[in-house]
Image (tube, rainbow, N blue to C red; front, side):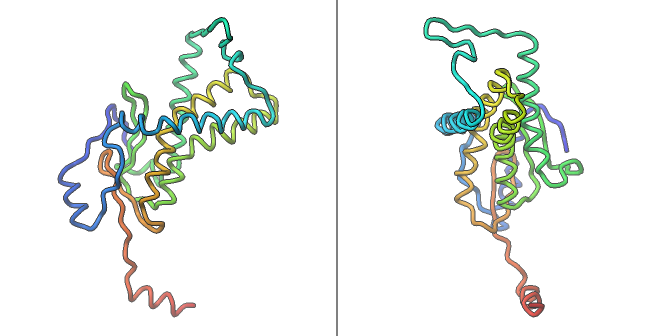
Length: 215
Protein backbone atom coordinates (compact mmCIF):
# COMPACT_ATOMS: atom_id res chain seq x y z
CA UNK A 1 0.00 0.00 0.00
CA UNK A 2 1.23 3.47 -0.88
CA UNK A 3 0.20 6.83 0.58
CA UNK A 4 0.03 9.60 -2.03
CA UNK A 5 -1.19 13.19 -2.10
CA UNK A 6 -2.86 13.35 -5.52
CA UNK A 7 -5.09 11.21 -7.68
CA UNK A 8 -3.02 8.83 -9.83
CA UNK A 9 -3.18 9.48 -13.58
CA UNK A 10 -3.86 6.89 -16.23
CA UNK A 11 -0.69 5.57 -17.89
CA UNK A 12 -1.17 5.71 -21.70
CA UNK A 13 1.26 2.84 -22.24
CA UNK A 14 -0.65 0.64 -19.79
CA UNK A 15 -3.89 1.67 -21.52
CA UNK A 16 -2.61 0.42 -24.91
CA UNK A 17 -1.25 -2.76 -23.33
CA UNK A 18 -4.54 -3.57 -21.60
CA UNK A 19 -6.60 -3.00 -24.76
CA UNK A 20 -4.12 -5.17 -26.68
CA UNK A 21 -4.70 -7.95 -24.14
CA UNK A 22 -8.48 -7.87 -24.66
CA UNK A 23 -9.35 -5.73 -21.65
CA UNK A 24 -12.43 -3.53 -22.15
CA UNK A 25 -12.54 0.09 -21.00
CA UNK A 26 -15.57 0.60 -18.75
CA UNK A 27 -17.82 3.55 -19.57
CA UNK A 28 -17.64 5.90 -16.60
CA UNK A 29 -17.28 9.63 -15.84
CA UNK A 30 -13.96 10.96 -17.06
CA UNK A 31 -13.36 13.18 -14.03
CA UNK A 32 -14.41 13.62 -10.41
CA UNK A 33 -16.67 16.61 -11.08
CA UNK A 34 -18.71 14.67 -13.66
CA UNK A 35 -19.02 11.74 -11.25
CA UNK A 36 -20.30 14.04 -8.48
CA UNK A 37 -22.88 15.65 -10.79
CA UNK A 38 -24.12 12.29 -12.06
CA UNK A 39 -24.36 10.91 -8.53
CA UNK A 40 -26.37 13.86 -7.15
CA UNK A 41 -29.73 11.99 -7.32
CA UNK A 42 -28.11 9.14 -5.40
CA UNK A 43 -27.22 11.57 -2.60
CA UNK A 44 -30.93 12.11 -2.06
CA UNK A 45 -31.76 8.40 -2.24
CA UNK A 46 -28.93 7.44 0.15
CA UNK A 47 -29.94 10.17 2.61
CA UNK A 48 -33.56 9.02 2.72
CA UNK A 49 -32.43 5.43 3.24
CA UNK A 50 -30.35 6.45 6.28
CA UNK A 51 -33.14 8.64 7.66
CA UNK A 52 -35.60 5.77 7.25
CA UNK A 53 -33.28 3.41 9.14
CA UNK A 54 -32.76 5.94 11.95
CA UNK A 55 -36.52 6.38 12.29
CA UNK A 56 -37.02 2.65 12.92
CA UNK A 57 -35.82 3.02 16.53
CA UNK A 58 -35.27 6.76 16.91
CA UNK A 59 -36.46 10.20 15.92
CA UNK A 60 -34.91 12.73 13.60
CA UNK A 61 -35.90 16.21 12.43
CA UNK A 62 -34.33 19.34 10.95
CA UNK A 63 -34.50 21.02 14.36
CA UNK A 64 -32.02 18.42 15.66
CA UNK A 65 -29.42 20.07 13.43
CA UNK A 66 -30.31 23.67 14.27
CA UNK A 67 -32.63 24.22 11.30
CA UNK A 68 -35.96 25.80 12.28
CA UNK A 69 -38.67 27.59 10.27
CA UNK A 70 -37.56 31.00 11.50
CA UNK A 71 -33.82 30.47 11.93
CA UNK A 72 -30.79 28.40 11.07
CA UNK A 73 -28.15 27.85 13.75
CA UNK A 74 -25.00 25.95 12.85
CA UNK A 75 -22.04 25.67 15.21
CA UNK A 76 -18.61 24.78 13.88
CA UNK A 77 -15.77 24.18 16.33
CA UNK A 78 -12.57 22.16 16.54
CA UNK A 79 -14.38 19.06 17.74
CA UNK A 80 -16.74 19.27 14.74
CA UNK A 81 -13.82 19.55 12.32
CA UNK A 82 -12.09 16.62 14.04
CA UNK A 83 -15.21 14.45 13.70
CA UNK A 84 -15.55 15.32 10.02
CA UNK A 85 -11.94 14.38 9.35
CA UNK A 86 -12.38 11.19 11.39
CA UNK A 87 -15.47 10.27 9.37
CA UNK A 88 -13.54 10.83 6.15
CA UNK A 89 -10.70 8.58 7.32
CA UNK A 90 -13.05 5.82 8.54
CA UNK A 91 -15.02 5.96 5.29
CA UNK A 92 -11.88 5.39 3.22
CA UNK A 93 -10.58 2.70 5.58
CA UNK A 94 -13.85 0.84 5.00
CA UNK A 95 -12.97 0.76 1.31
CA UNK A 96 -9.38 -0.21 2.00
CA UNK A 97 -9.89 -3.19 4.31
CA UNK A 98 -11.94 -5.02 1.69
CA UNK A 99 -9.16 -4.85 -0.92
CA UNK A 100 -7.38 -8.23 -0.93
CA UNK A 101 -3.84 -8.08 0.50
CA UNK A 102 -3.91 -4.28 0.57
CA UNK A 103 -1.06 -4.10 3.11
CA UNK A 104 1.41 -5.93 0.85
CA UNK A 105 0.13 -4.48 -2.42
CA UNK A 106 2.30 -1.87 -4.15
CA UNK A 107 -0.58 -1.09 -6.51
CA UNK A 108 -3.03 0.05 -3.85
CA UNK A 109 -3.15 3.73 -2.94
CA UNK A 110 -4.70 5.84 -0.21
CA UNK A 111 -4.42 9.59 -0.18
CA UNK A 112 -5.87 13.00 0.54
CA UNK A 113 -6.54 15.86 -1.86
CA UNK A 114 -8.36 19.19 -1.62
CA UNK A 115 -11.46 17.28 -2.77
CA UNK A 116 -11.24 14.77 0.06
CA UNK A 117 -9.71 11.33 0.57
CA UNK A 118 -9.60 8.40 -1.80
CA UNK A 119 -8.64 4.75 -2.06
CA UNK A 120 -7.70 3.13 -5.35
CA UNK A 121 -6.24 -0.22 -6.30
CA UNK A 122 -4.73 -1.28 -9.61
CA UNK A 123 -4.74 -4.94 -8.56
CA UNK A 124 -7.01 -7.32 -10.45
CA UNK A 125 -10.24 -7.94 -8.52
CA UNK A 126 -13.49 -9.76 -9.21
CA UNK A 127 -16.74 -7.97 -9.96
CA UNK A 128 -18.25 -9.10 -6.66
CA UNK A 129 -15.22 -7.81 -4.74
CA UNK A 130 -15.45 -4.48 -6.58
CA UNK A 131 -19.08 -4.14 -5.46
CA UNK A 132 -18.20 -4.91 -1.84
CA UNK A 133 -15.33 -2.42 -1.83
CA UNK A 134 -17.57 0.28 -3.32
CA UNK A 135 -20.58 0.02 -1.00
CA UNK A 136 -18.92 -1.07 2.27
CA UNK A 137 -18.77 2.45 3.85
CA UNK A 138 -22.42 3.19 3.08
CA UNK A 139 -23.74 -0.17 4.26
CA UNK A 140 -21.64 -0.29 7.44
CA UNK A 141 -21.67 3.36 8.54
CA UNK A 142 -25.06 4.57 7.27
CA UNK A 143 -27.15 1.40 7.54
CA UNK A 144 -25.72 -1.04 10.09
CA UNK A 145 -24.27 1.44 12.61
CA UNK A 146 -27.51 3.43 13.15
CA UNK A 147 -29.40 0.20 13.84
CA UNK A 148 -26.83 -1.02 16.38
CA UNK A 149 -26.44 2.38 18.04
CA UNK A 150 -30.22 2.85 18.27
CA UNK A 151 -30.70 -0.51 19.95
CA UNK A 152 -28.21 0.43 22.66
CA UNK A 153 -29.48 4.01 22.98
CA UNK A 154 -26.20 5.49 21.76
CA UNK A 155 -27.41 7.31 18.66
CA UNK A 156 -26.80 10.97 19.48
CA UNK A 157 -27.64 13.98 17.32
CA UNK A 158 -23.99 14.32 16.35
CA UNK A 159 -23.83 10.71 15.21
CA UNK A 160 -27.06 11.14 13.24
CA UNK A 161 -25.47 14.06 11.43
CA UNK A 162 -22.29 12.09 10.66
CA UNK A 163 -24.31 9.09 9.43
CA UNK A 164 -26.29 11.28 7.04
CA UNK A 165 -23.15 13.08 5.94
CA UNK A 166 -21.60 9.71 5.14
CA UNK A 167 -24.68 8.89 3.03
CA UNK A 168 -24.15 12.07 1.04
CA UNK A 169 -20.47 11.25 0.61
CA UNK A 170 -21.31 7.72 -0.56
CA UNK A 171 -23.16 8.87 -3.68
CA UNK A 172 -20.18 8.34 -6.01
CA UNK A 173 -19.66 4.90 -4.47
CA UNK A 174 -23.30 4.07 -5.21
CA UNK A 175 -22.87 5.34 -8.75
CA UNK A 176 -20.36 2.52 -9.19
CA UNK A 177 -23.21 0.05 -8.65
CA UNK A 178 -24.91 1.37 -11.78
CA UNK A 179 -21.70 1.56 -13.79
CA UNK A 180 -20.74 -2.01 -12.90
CA UNK A 181 -23.92 -3.37 -14.53
CA UNK A 182 -22.17 -3.07 -17.90
CA UNK A 183 -19.62 -5.68 -16.73
CA UNK A 184 -20.36 -9.44 -17.00
CA UNK A 185 -20.90 -11.37 -13.77
CA UNK A 186 -17.72 -13.44 -13.95
CA UNK A 187 -15.44 -10.63 -15.14
CA UNK A 188 -12.21 -9.41 -13.57
CA UNK A 189 -11.60 -5.68 -13.16
CA UNK A 190 -8.41 -3.66 -13.20
CA UNK A 191 -7.74 0.06 -12.84
CA UNK A 192 -5.21 2.25 -14.59
CA UNK A 193 -5.36 5.51 -12.70
CA UNK A 194 -9.01 6.56 -12.75
CA UNK A 195 -9.80 4.32 -15.73
CA UNK A 196 -11.40 0.95 -15.07
CA UNK A 197 -11.11 -2.05 -17.38
CA UNK A 198 -12.80 -5.43 -17.36
CA UNK A 199 -12.10 -8.79 -18.91
CA UNK A 200 -13.70 -12.22 -18.84
CA UNK A 201 -10.79 -14.60 -18.47
CA UNK A 202 -11.05 -17.82 -20.42
CA UNK A 203 -10.61 -21.00 -18.41
CA UNK A 204 -8.10 -23.36 -19.93
CA UNK A 205 -10.15 -25.96 -21.81
CA UNK A 206 -7.99 -28.88 -20.70
CA UNK A 207 -8.22 -27.82 -17.05
CA UNK A 208 -11.97 -27.47 -17.41
CA UNK A 209 -12.23 -31.01 -18.82
CA UNK A 210 -10.14 -32.38 -15.95
CA UNK A 211 -12.33 -30.51 -13.49
CA UNK A 212 -15.45 -32.05 -15.03
CA UNK A 213 -13.95 -35.53 -14.67
CA UNK A 214 -13.70 -35.00 -10.92
CA UNK A 215 -17.47 -34.69 -10.78
